[in-house]
Amino acid sequence: MVSTQPRAPIEYVTTGIWPEATLRDDAPVQVQAAQLFARNLRAALDAEGIGLRTLATRVGVNHATISRALAGLRFCDAATLARLEAGLDTALWPTYETTIGYRTPTN
Image 1 (cartoon, rainbow, N blue to C red):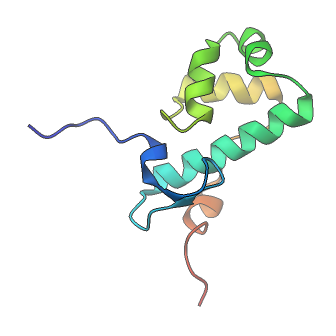
Image 2 (image 1 turned 90 degrees about the vertical axis):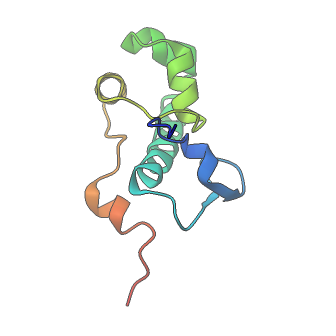
């Protein structure tokens, strides 16, 4: 039987530590977006000077859910993303242009 579950983003890492790692060439666009999301979330947490539990309480999301998305163990769903962006008052999910152009060589 073929699994319909998507692979965890971190499974596409070739070298380095998520989310700063290098991804495999066959990493789908949603993995690239998840990597940029994790980088953006880490930067927002650092800028606010808060931890995962504080953010979780602020936005009403389980801290383990945020932790797994930050670690690349799962994808962030739309409801969680909306709560995180509202709670941090910043965009976290990358735009189409930054995701598609992220690993596209320039001509």
